[in-house]
Length: 378
Ligand SMILES: Cc1cc2nc3c(=O)[nH]c(=O)nc-3n(C[C@H](O)[C@H](O)[C@H](O)COP(=O)(O)OP(=O)(O)OC[C@H]3O[C@@H](n4cnc5c(N)ncnc54)[C@H](O)[C@@H]3O)c2cc1C
Image (cartoon, rainbow, N blue to C red; front, side, top):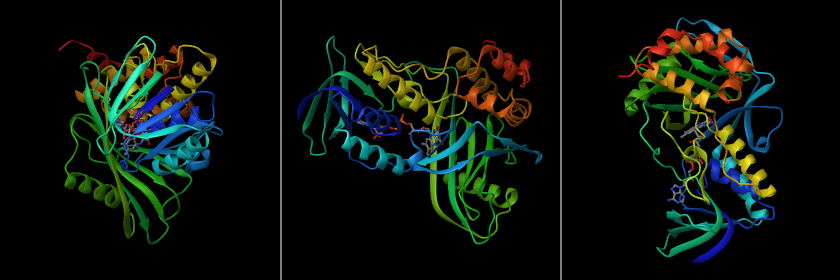
């Protein structure tokens, strides 16, 4: 199959679907190329003030969050003006595909092999499920296929986790409160671990065990960690596991360039939208998409913006190296951060939207000595 378009979007995950559905119904001729293979469902959470684009498919929301220290100390954090929202990827996909279909975006089912740049147009080549070649040319290509970083970084941790969707026989959860980080889990020698709890009713919740460490755990390692967290820490009454979700998100200071040609850009995780210190990506994807759509409509250079500024990436690098080297006590660091800073500022900081003055305050909440030691060569 041969074809041409104004814009080709490669990949139909969070970034590809968000961009293609945002451009749907506009003046540009848009094609979305992705393989027909179903992806494992994911639960995406993010915070934003007020209403948002994905509200029609938000499955749960919270205005309060909790953080627990290793000793059981508890912080209850009002999130205003933000709300923490949860979208399940199948709902996001269904909603995006409805808009894509209604808005005239063409879909091509193919696995892309190469995207090559050119002065007037870029070319996307791939194969459909029957092995036939697919060639598409476009003025602009936005590629969201996963890629390794463009160069080695100084730190490569993973945010790796397994979550159980649980249903208890008796009420056991407070539906209005999300637990962001619960450090009453055994802490690894390097890195940090915590529980994460998203209650959707008094008897249903997603309960996750998460680590920021170098390597994923074995199957039995995650099961043991979740048993310890649901049993010893949460003391959950009889429950059944209705579904399981897991993932490993790279936390690295390695570069992910957004512009890889005159007419070829990367978006999503491939385009640096994952915050190195947290793994949060979804909200940054939405910011990238909005910027691209506005630039395309205005006839400006439609390159995706940097998801996070240099200062914030530098701070992330210091934190990750400190965690990796065992120089920073992750549980103490995050507890102090949430305890000593207004929650709205912490959330803006994690969005990369704080000023230098606010960043100094954030750094002041952390023990500076060990963090700076991580910058020494070696
Ligand atoms: C289980 C899990 C939970 C997460 N939870 C959160 C969360 O709560 N909040 C948050 O902010 N972030 C979260 N993340 C991180 C991040 O938001 C997700 O990884 C998100 O899916 C990244 O979007 P993306 O579009 O960059 O990549 P993906 O969603 O992985 O999309 C990449 C797309 O490229 C396609 N593709 C691959 N190869 C080809 C090819 N050769 N040709 C064409 N298409 C191809 C794939 O089919 C896929 O559709 C989570 C990640 C995981 C794994």
